[in-house]
Length: 509
Image 1 (cartoon, rainbow, N blue to C red):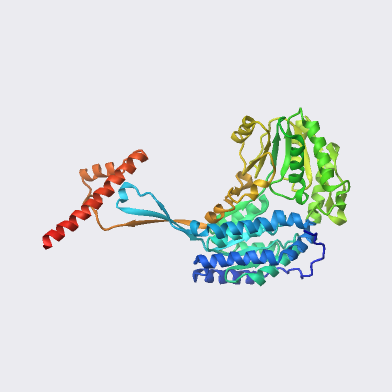
Image 2 (spheres, one colour):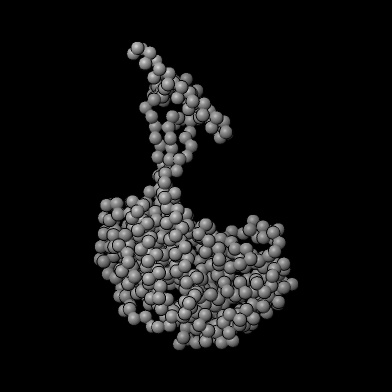
């Protein structure tokens, strides 16, 4: 795969007026009420159009993301487009099964009867895209949204960050997608405010804690459910039993891919003191192996998204540069900041109070400290490197995080069978694969009853016998007892019906 370096030729988008946003929501609401996405065939057709968009628009998207983030075409494929294509295929393969009514058990009180759970679409959903993985983080929730039978209004990342990608996405959405199914919004703070004044059936937001709180407050005004995929400081905990070189390479890959602008990157490292110096040395070598002695000249090393992010990373570096053992190169004109490692060794007090530990770094800085205990907010991800199952279980049982990957970094989000989502400060709700279908659906309970066995004791006035009867039917017995009694009652009901039919035939004769 070649690197795409041609400058995008599409004009950048202009902010969208509030009236246009209102029109989009109204049009989508009408389309949903008219059943545009009720048939599974319509949902599959929409997903196939997304497939076509990604395959035919691949070069345009690569060109745009190279301009915005200096992301290599292979990295774009691995971390953006291929992930979405795999997710689409998963939904196309499984939609019939996921959408089918699911039969569940019926309690004694409702025998004879049958119970089902149906997956109903929610309606008009709003999806907030973000800039660090602007293709993948738009399409992954959108796939689940369409698969579940909803229509969507998506907010593109057009706030001075990935403007070229936003223009490319807008062009491709206009070209390939049905406007009855999907529309987009572009613009900054004013567009966001106008968007959040509309009533949606679900809001899905990927971003930082600040935007997450704004969305949650606005959604509360209309009692709109929200899924928040936020961030946090994801630690890596490393014991002495590791494969040193493999661990070093996987940590460097996870920490510095996309110039560190990844919500599930390892944001800081705790390593056993006995191997601390060796791991740091191996990580420094891995950084050189990956990006060369001059990372700015590498076609495989990204750029910070804008000058504000560059300035923020520079401020953190200046505060902690006494502990820098690798990197620190920067060029404001290119938004370049090299992969940088801080080693605080065993000075936990300084490490904990450092600028690097004040919040999520979201950039190419990686602080390391030798073993100690620390309490921190619940991260979006956690990484543990160890060959010892007892150590792995110790970490898993005594920590809380959105996800865990053992002996690797970030790749857990590439498995569609694993839900991805945060907990606590890192977000609420999860998606990917079947979980995406569920989160964009309403699980509607349906109970089918018959007209037979309409006993008088159900109705007022209540009698002592009614109390005894309800006490028997609603007794909190173990499930095995209930199932046995249900089977007996079902057989009895069938027998009663057959007896009545036989009696009627006999009398008729």
